[in-house]
Image (cartoon, rainbow, N blue to C red; front, top):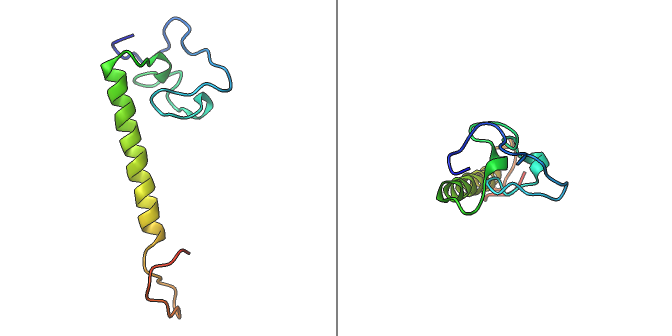
Length: 90
């Protein structure tokens, strides 16, 4: 469907264990919006500019979240007694 809808259309929710969500780029079992949401990702298709934009936006959010995790993991050590002034993990 070109217009995103909240519910599956025409049995689009059927998927095998190896299927990926076009929007989330994750296994269908990991997609929180596969069968419902606004819109239901099971209705997504690559011929739609709207769905392609949703995919791009989702990838940007994932990239930003991953960058934040790396930044937070590399904060200066605040452990009392630690003599390392440099950034380090943990």
